[in-house]
Amino acid sequence: MKQSEINFKITLDENNLPEKIDWSATEGAEKSSSKAVMIALWDAKENNTLRIDLWTKDMMVDEMKQFYHQCLLSMADTFDRATGEAETAKEMRGFANHFAEKLELIVKKQP
Image 1 (cartoon, rainbow, N blue to C red):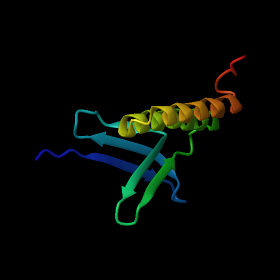
Image 2: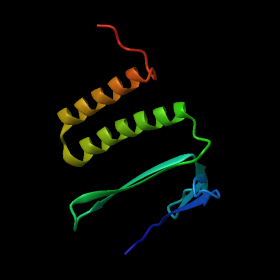
Image 3: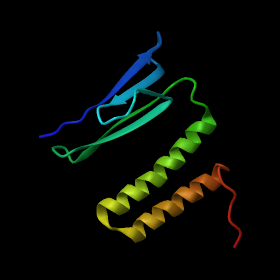
Image 4: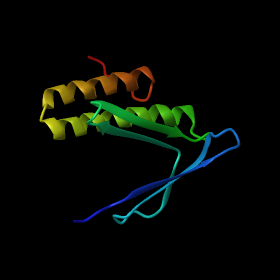
């Protein structure tokens, strides 16, 4: 059986706030740095989602807004592939676009 690993190394400051997020994967990805990471894990025993959300002190608010918008779109794509619920995924993308309009990440489409 083949195995793969994804590793995160979080450098913390004296107040335990993330200063640096480094990650690497055994499947060919070179070691890289990031300003933010969101990890969601399904706990089948508890029927609940476990989450790890970290961001560094130098992650700007505008970057965080973009990050969330792109995560929402990515979740819609994954939901569509995993469930085949294309219509619901379309609604999720619509919300993501509404979110982006509210944050002025994209220009609101005129009717």
